[in-house]
Length: 515
Ligand code: GAL
Image 1 (cartoon, protein in one colour):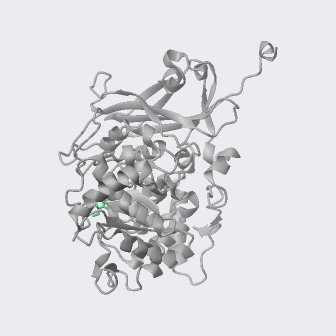
Image 2: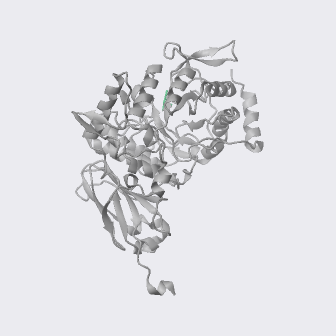
Image 3: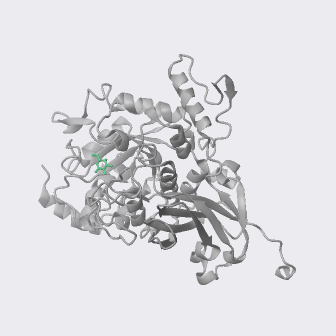
């Protein structure tokens, strides 16, 4: 039973006087965390086999070496508390016959991290035991089992919400308990944006959800996810069944809250879950990457289609997400899809841009440009240098407007479906052989294909180092240039996106500059 009296005292006490190690000071998530979570595709259908098989597929498919590190077990894994052992949580022995430590060991043996789920309430959302009032004993169990990541939900919080102080204190209790274990455990808040976690999340945790649950749909209206539309902000009712467009609109107002160690979480990816088109999934992945959301795959990897593996494997886009500067892109303009330009309605077109660290120019950073077409027709979109660089000077006064830029289309080097299929087939071979699996060269259709030759390996070289070394897989190739005061133009699919890296073209030093 939770003691409400002592909780109120704790609220005042810890908020005003406690100076302790905060979640974000755990040294983790310096770039947004990447991984996989079972919830979006599989809900409560969890088991040891699912996690271990998925971990192996993450390795086989080259996803680990692209940075997807955490294998996260969501809700529905426990079966009560053990009264004779500090009331600690008991894993469901039908689903996890060897216990959680054995699962963690298997995942660690593959050089991956193990994530688990609990809830800052009496029960989890699936009505299993929650951790409210049991923070220390549960944090200790997680640490003993070898857990590297905790997703911490918000159901059945017994009314301990309603303002930022109450919610932040409730979440801080678990953050402090995790830190006290001495084991680095990435702390991922899942309170759906309730009580504005972007204001306090960075002092408590490594990321915070900004909305109700994502739904595998581009822009469907659903009254259960209120605050719909481009001007939705400070939403008080998180709801659920939130479309990609709905969530993206919400992050537009809080992009500046993202920072190394603490990120806006737009929720797990829906890429590969089947209800969106390929351009919609391309746009979804691009949008989440540009605003530095955690990239947590949410599909069933045992049944992945090649085009979805190809999206999730785009290292040039991931390099934007993992950029060492850790700044979110920002929305520069949005035009509503009102049909005036011949389009047939939709959620409008938008330009986003932002700073990236990678550069060859001593004074000017690279820039990411994201053009999103939410309208119901394919369209030509134009982004002027003036709009792209507006943060560096208004109305065309940014020095970058007077420069020339290389334009690198970050989807131009997308892996072909044939290659993706060969990777998938190779793994199926691996699971049927006792001789193990050689991930560098496989035989597909009778031809030996070096399928991993053209793939980025972030295990061997971090994204930061790869960018500093001008790795061509991360940069993409130059597809066009933009001249001073010029405009970047792109054809963008219906419900699609185009994404570019702009890199300054060094200009010859003029004589008078040397004087
Ligand atoms: C929701 C949460 C989901 C998932 C689910 C499990 O509250 O936002 O991501 O974890 O609970 O029951």
